[in-house]
Length: 544
Image 1 (cartoon, rainbow, N blue to C red):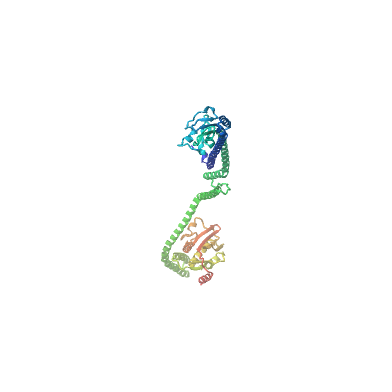
Image 2 (cartoon, helix red, strand yellow):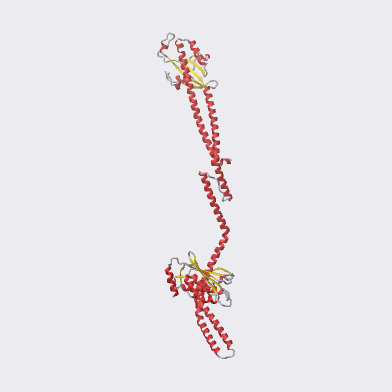
């Protein structure tokens, strides 16, 4: 199984960097040692060349005089030098004439031997050799490396003209000087350098690895750990966790983006949680809105159906009721002039019939008003002017009921596209409802306010009555639903007002009700493109 620590980015970076450094140092060491070996071998070869030339020059005179003892002494003396393994002189036939190893003097070497094969392997013995052909490398009996140099002894003029011995003039090579030097010092130097380079490479690799580890740990590993901790905190649900990294590199940018993501996740989670917590409330609110819309639609349908029925019933009842009212008043008038026993009681009954007939006539009149259909003629009119006219019409009701009128109108006038007569009828119905809601004969205050918002003109009518019971609120705009005692109301006033306002794409509602009074709120769509000179013109039309 792969160790877990190898999965860390920092460990991977350290291993990669250390491997690259070690590989570079290994290549460097290899080529350095190879160059060192080559240079030392060249130096040793040159040393062998030098020794060989010294021997040739030192023994030349002795060879010309054929003084073998001198030659032997010279060779032995030079052979005692440090690094010289052996010195031999062969004649042309491969016989060893001189050697630092006296046991091999007079022996003939095999021409296939390494020291002879350089020349004898060729079809014709060469008169000269290339420097690299003169060098050979082998191991002695002790297993140590030895460098051998074959230096041909050429037939010079002094050799074939000398009186001491004779050499034929056509011979180019008289023999070979074989100098063998050891490579112990070279090998020791190379081994020492290898050890130094390897130890230095190991130390340098460890040092760089440690420094790299510290650098990566501070610059890379620590920020990555902080980011990893942040991710773990987010996974645990700590969505507002922030990473404290202030660097401006890629990791710092990553941490900053992480903090932004964390903030957005926290905000989204809180929003979702808030939605979840308030979902039932929102559903309830939407249900209430839908219920109100449904009730409005139902109310409109009721009004439409009832309007059609009311028109038919009103026309059928109007004439008979008018006859009953007229004849009952006529009979009461005639009987009251005659002296008939019990006529006072009869007149009382006839007056009761007349009053009830009049009340039925009022109901019929309200039914006719309620059933009146059609859009009418819509023109721009001043709402303030319509309110002023409505208040003038009901002014006598205000006076006789001890009502104090308070007007709260803004300076700005408002224009509404409407059928002003119907709007006036709706205002009068609500105003009369407010007057009748206040106690008599004490009276109270009637406040009429006019204002607007960006889309609508708003009229508020407030009374000082006892308020509307909660159980009656859902039904106050239904036809024939009345809260007045003693059969004083027909229950059509607010229903008519409701139909008119809805027909004008407005709204009417009870904004507030309590034992201290009730406020009706009426809104109508505001005309935004009206001009002031139109206001005066429309006001004159209404007055006329």
